[in-house]
Length: 360
Image (tube, rainbow, N blue to C red; front, side, top):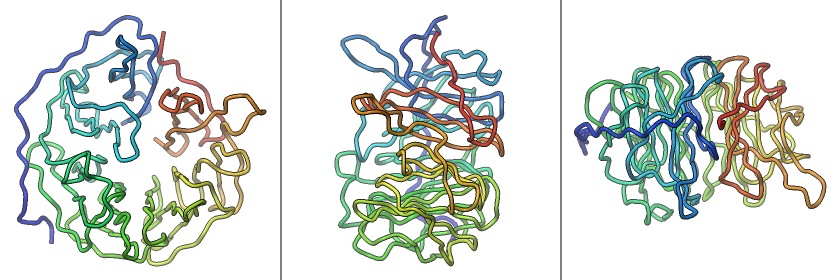
């Protein structure tokens, strides 16, 4: 089945939301990053806006980070507070079309100058693009009731990048709170979330037209996360919490069989894979910083952050990802202020890192 005959969502009318562009933007803290080329990036973050408040802001560069300008920001509904069930992000398909979510969804077709609210029913947990489509993972019952693992409460929506309406996708298994989405080209993967049932991996290789279910390597009752690398057909990485620790798993055949990486990792493990052999993982022992493997998880070496002497704030990773086979990015957050971020760039596949100056 391609689409269910259920809910159809109609885009809202155009809402022009333009934020003034100061020459100097002080105190910007990065939260989410998206790039469509080595030159064109967007960074969603926060800035101080009076009375000890933080307000959302978006920076754009068209010259690879040499210069940034502040572009438009959605006028309402973007929540910056760190909550375990609330997600925040920005993603672009090309230099014009992009989306900001958390907990509502806004879209732009002019690179971020103006934004249009997309009135989806529920809390938007994730948005990803691939294969000429945009996908949204939505908790149907709203922000305050999302963390409920007793009944299915999430659905996958999709629409063409340009035009068309949002439609609910018919899936072969229900999605519970904590479901995870991964999209790369026409490959669409979902982990079914936190339920007492055995975890399932839902796989499409034709742009969500058809799906099959595969065995998940994760544990029932705990939400695993799936990741698709930039290259490697059939390659999937997964992080699987075990309660106090986490395991890194890798499949080379589209989820039919899994192989564990060593050593065991801290709970909250996240992975940014490049290929079947190369990936960034965090927090990773022994330093609990960002580690790089180039042999499929047999060996790791710390490439950023980690533990510092007692009494000294550590350097932790909020997010990391590959943009090309050699270029990667990360958002750093000091342990003492978990929501404050700095952007770093690597031009050698994640081996070394240089800070990108976002504030002037």
